[in-house]
Image (tube, rainbow, N blue to C red; front, side):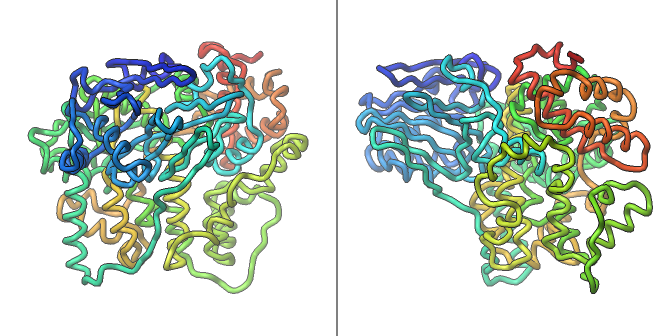
Amino acid sequence: MVPELRHRGPDANGTWVSGETALGHTRLAIIDLTAAGSQPMVSADGRCVLVFNGEIYNYRELRHELQQQGERFHSASDTEVILHGYRRWGTDAVAKLRGMFSLAVWDGARQQLFLARDRMGIKPLFYSFLDPGLVFGSEIKALLAHPDHRRAMNPAAVNAYLELGYVPGPMTIFEGIHSLGPGSWLVYGEQGLKIQRYWTPQFTGNGTGGREPELLEQLDQRLNDAVKSHLVADVPVGAFLSGGIDSSLVCAVAQRHAPEPLHTFTIGFGGGGDERRYARSVAAHIGSNHHETLAAPDIVAELPRLVKHLEQPLFDNSALPTHLVSQAAHPHVKVVLSGDGGDEPFAGYEWTRLALSLPRAPGSWQPAGWRWAYRSGAAGLAQRLAYDLTHSADDRYQRRVCVSAALRSWLCRPEFLASCTDMPGPSTAGLLDLALVRDRRDRFAFIDLCRYLPDDVLFKVDRMSMAHSLEVRVPLLDHLLLEWVLSLPFGLRFRHGRGKYLLRQLAARYLPAEVLTPRKQGFTIPIGRWLRGELHDRVDALFRSPSFERRGVIRPQAARDLMGMHCSRRYEFGHRIWQIVLLEMWARIWLDQRGLDEAWSSE
């Protein structure tokens, strides 16, 4: 199991075994580079053993607090702080941690295993039950390496993936393997299993009573505090710089606190999104040591590698750029900051903006079928606008973040749909009803923050960066900063039909004017063009292959019909086709266990 995670920690590895309990670890040395910080780490009295992935940014403050209570330390690592904290405070220790983490403590005195994950789910943690016992790991591939583990597809997870483009926790695409939820801990021992959530984001919207200028000053101070805390390391720290508001602001603030020019990294994509000139402008403005790349990847070769590292199918067209920019950063730094986490609390996504800002017209236009949602040209735009104007904000939001049941029913085999149990947990509509918000307009941001962020965005960033032994830190998701942001009234986060209102006011203090100009942002790859061009024959062969037929999920003729409609240019089905390709590629690599060079086989 340990060798399967070596890419996450190439600097050292270790195991600890006692009776029927075993812990393993691979180390990416960031804080306390000496052997004293190695893991598994055993407490001085031998009672507790810890393995831990991530960083604790307030470890020095906690260390001082523990020393005041009589604890004695033998290293300068944040790992030992967690170990002493658990011995002193038990499960309450995780609520004191400021950082990103997945951790496991074997408590020999209580004969129980304690697992915990950070508040927002920045670091992953998976577990499954075998007969008898429990296995866990930072990635699914470690669990599958266990000789008693079987590989089987979870139909409910596949159905959820086809609806959302990602697999929502706590389930995974593998039958019997679960994801521990963000802000949760698990205890397993002789008394059985207990899972508890220790932190949940809440859009209180009750503000702090200050006026806008005062709140802007507070945001400035809190952001600086968060970014400064995320720079703690005994190795150089760099940053991803896309040229958008979020990453640019994080880089600008980080450069204020860095002792030397920050290494910043940008990637462009021929035929896709390319905002290198904005990133270049920011880098010159803040004085960073800037690295930029124009990528021209061999998608046929790269896609199987991505799927291998992702472990679950993920339709997110920024996965490939994240992989490539991580690859570019790896030779220079071990740690980078990113701007992820700015869109969700500030209602910054386009789908949220359109759900909130479009007026409601009288009547209700009910289109026939599902093809209208993908029709190209002016006619398609007019139909989608007619739908939006005559439907509620909830309907508009769900149209953009969910693939319709009608399309999935047409696309999937009836026997597959019959095998799918209901998705564990609430649907998107159910989440809208359950959202912990004071202002109903925040419900969309709540879903973006609590489901899309951990199960798509952070999932992708962790896998693509750790594939290159690169740690990504997310200061905009520092829980002290985030809790304050969620207390702001809705109008300070979303105003005049745009999200990130107060964040944009702050960015104006730090960034050049051209970066602040409204523009379409995001980093895309030209999926539609690829499917009509260089990938067409390979994808067509994949949809005609015997293995695709035997998979029993998608009707092969329906998949080929989507390709035909897409290539006619009357419809834009690139994203839906790509979603199917990724699912089949995942099944070939992870269920059939084909080599990467056989992933595109027509057999």
